[in-house]
Structures are given as C-alpha cells and as structure tokens.
Amino acid sequence: MFRSMMFALVVATAAASWSGGHDTSFREAMLPVRLQDDGQRVLLVSRYEVSIASWQQCHAQGACSHMPRGPDNAVQMPVTDINWFDIQEYLAWANAKSGGGLRLPTVKEWQDISRSVIQPPPPPEFTDPRLEWAANYGREKSPSGPVRKSGSHSRSPDGISDLDGNVWEWTSSCFRKGFDGADCPAYIAAGEHLAAMSVFVRDPALGGCAIGVPPAHIGFRLVADK
Image (tube, rainbow, N blue to C red; front, side, top):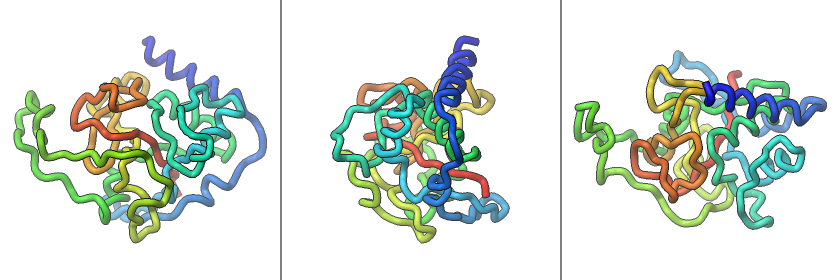
C-alpha cells in the first residue's frame, strides 16, 4: 500500500508541475524499429539515451526533484545516477510536454532493439530457481570507466546508438512476474547483460543489484508505440 501511494504521488506531482503546448522534439528524436519477435510491430525508439541536458530542463521546470551530480559541461552525455522513481517524474513531465505515449521499453523490446549489437546470453549454469542468483556467475561483464558522450559507442542498423555502452538502461519489466507497477521491488536494467536493480538505487556501485553483476552506470531510453 505504501509503495502504491508513493508511486501515485510521484507521478501526480510531476505531471502537475508543468503545463504548456506539445513539444514535438521527443518523437522527432526517435527512429522506427521493427520488432522481429513481436509480430513485426514497429516501435519508435530514441536514438540516444536521455541526456543530462534534457534532465536539467525537467529539473529547472520543477518536475524532476532529483538532479544527479555531474559537470555542467557534460549536457550531451546520458543522464545517470537516477532510480526508478526519478524516471517516473521525468516520464510524467515528458508526456505532459509531448502529448503522451512516451515510456520505458520492456525487456523483450530492449533485447529486440539491441539484437544486432548485444550477444544473446549463454544458457544458465543452473536451472534450479533457488540458484538463479548464481546462474551466470563469472560469465557476466560490466564495462567500466566514466560515462562517455552520447554516440560514442556502436550504432545499430536501425540507427540506435549506445546500446552496448557502459550505461545500462532501466526497463519497465519487473524482475518477477506478477509484480509490475508500483509494487515491484526491482526492475530489470538492460545492457551487456540483464541485472535486477532495486527501485531505490541510483548508483549501482553502492549495491542494490538483486540478480546479476551490477552495472557500471544506469540511465534510460524512451520508446513509444507507433
């Protein structure tokens, strides 16, 4: 109940903090990607992860309450050090500006989007659900180093950049089926491998990874149904 109330308050506060005409720049920054594993459905996907510059705009307009630490001249880098609740504020703001429809991808969508640049995971070492936490022990990697400027990593044939960078991306998929929404304690962050991250975590280095090797950094990318 507390989690549900907290989620509703975050979204309502962010949505109420901004009003104005529709901003077409969000969708103009997206490219169509045909999802091969979902009935050839076309999904609009942001070319880059959400940037510090866009987050600063949300913060300046009072919709994003948290402003991650970082150099002011790094506005064209992906925003990181944000948790799942921070993103709900940003989504409420971005949808109020754009007219709606912007969201996080599901894990299935993210894997389809990244199929040309991310190798599929090997079969797990164990099939016993009780050993899920150790199923890929020693076989996962998290590229380290500082966050780099948007566009510094690979670009997919669809034109989507940085899927294989060292910034993992929050998805809308709960790490356990049946808990999606406000009651989910951890969501999947996607990158070189999948990691289940607590909804409260902003810095993976400080812990909070429920399953999988912790990512180096966490950001996010927008998608929209065409």
